[in-house]
Every structure is written in C-alpha cells, then in structure tokens.
Length: 387
Image (cartoon, rainbow, N blue to C red; front, side, top):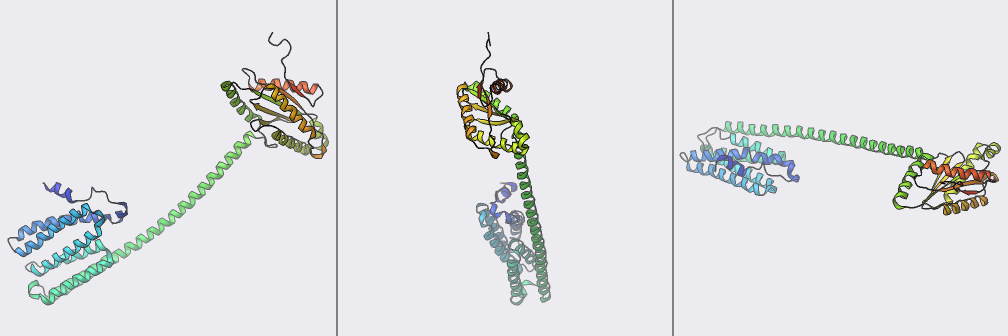
C-alpha cells in the first residue's frame, strides 16, 4: 500500500459530515491534515531514534501508532470527534512530557509545549485551553524542581518558556475574544438584515395581494354593469360562446328572453334619473330572484335586460317570461311606480350567433310593444320562411 492510499484510508475529507456537526468541521480537517502529518513524522523519528535511545523510540513510535488508531476510530465514529480530540491532547501531553524529561540533548524540547498549547486552544477553545495551560505549567515546574539534572534547562529558561506559554495563551485568548465579538456583531447585522428582508417581503406580499385584489376588481368591473351589478353585454358574449359549445356537444336547448321596460322615459322625465336608476336596480334584483341559478341575467343596455336560459326550450322560456311578468305586476316598486315590461322570447337555432338570436328576440319584443306592451311575445318564423 503506497502513501497516497494510506493517507486516503485515514483522512475524512471525502466522508460526509452530519449537519449537526458542521460547526466543528474544522476539527476534522485539522486531525486529518496536521495531526496526520505529525503521526507520520513521529513514525519516521521513532525509527531514527532506535539508534539513539530505545525508550525515546518507543515513546515516539507509540505516539505514531496510537495517532493512526485515533484517526481510524474517528473515521468509523464521526460523532465521537470531541472524545478523539481529548485523547489526542492527552496523548500529545504525555509525548511532550516524555521528550521534555528524557530528551535532554535537544534544547528545543520546550517548543512541543507551545505546539500543544496552540492545539488545545484550537480544538477545545479558551476555557479548556486555560486548563491545558495550567497542566503544561505544572509539568514544566515539576520537571524543573524534581528533574533539573535530567532536563538540562536552567531556571531562567523555564521562567522564560513559562512566560512565553502564558503570553501565547493570552494572545490567542484575545484573538478569540475579538473574533467572537466580530461574530456577534455580524450575527446581529445578519439578524437585522433578515428582519428588514422579512419586513420588505411582507410589504411586497401585501402589495401583491392588494394588486391582485385590484386586478380582480378591475376584471369584475370590465364585465359587470356598474348600476345593477349584472353582467354586461361583453360578458354575455363570452358566456354565450360557452353555452353554444355545450349545445353542440350535448345537443341541449337554449333560449333567450329580451326584456324592455314600458314607458321608461316617462319615469325619468317625471321622477328624475336617480329614481329611474333605482327602478332599474329593483328590477334587476327581481329578475335575479325569479330565475334559476343556472340562468344568466344581464343588463343589455339602457332599460333593456337579457336572460339566457341554458337547457330550456322555447315553450319553457315563454313560461318563465310569463312568470316574471306576473311577479312584476304584484311587486311594489319605489315611489309606488306602476311598472310593466315587454318580453321577446326565442330559442337557439343551428348556426346561431349571439347577434342572430338577439335579432329574433328583438323582433319578438318589437311585436310585443306594438301589440299593447306588458306582453310576452314568442318569436315565430314569418309566413313563407324557408319556402
């Protein structure tokens, strides 16, 4: 197995880290890069020290092998990252003490405590880093008081090194405090930004809602008569095309009733247009109450109204018109106005358009007007039609 395969066997960079542990992903990266390299170097140094000191070689090789085991264990148990970090620090602490007490020919042994201090702060933070600093200081002073001949350092060297370790801790601690403050400020800014975005989003949502309401209102206004609230002739054209398709598909009937108020001009002249509008509104409400829910009532224009009756033949439409006429006779309009209307009734014929069917209904209505008004006139084909 070459070094590249060995590295990929222990590293975790390609391994998925659970979402709940993403905040400490940096610890995985550290253990599988810096710490992994340290284990390799320790292995090499252990082999070299076999020719110098068997005890030091065993300490160094033990550090290397336990380090590889920790990495392997971490790869199989990612959720145990904090435990592995603690074990790595304990292992490194023992290693640093061993080198400090036994490896006296090398004057840079105290530098391992600096590295250990930095690693503890990085992996465990400021609070636990303080405990590790105290543990390091205790180890250094124990060596100074009880193993002064073995370690080969003067008291001044120990004091200077201890002061350097304390300075290192406070430097990193100050950096972490500044970083935490900046992070807190950034978090506050992000929160403020989120609140502003949410506020703007709510305003935009409300504006969109109002816009949709206005669109619906405008759409309703486009097909609704403003006085009576009934459909206007533009909407009737649309609905008639739909009903025409229904007739062609299901072979059903359809009839229309064209209604005109008798002598409506005299009402306006006598009572005024305001009263005239009131009469139109009352008539519209009466028409809506007199028909089925499937029937379509509209204001065709002026004092004319149009009723489209789906699935209704000519005879049934005539009966409905007569029913409406009778209702009008007993209805009491405002200002005790006596109101009568004339009706023109016709039914759908093949190839009819709205214009042609209205034309026939208008002919029947004209006939009702000429026959004395207050009548229901059903359209009949002129004599000789089709001959």
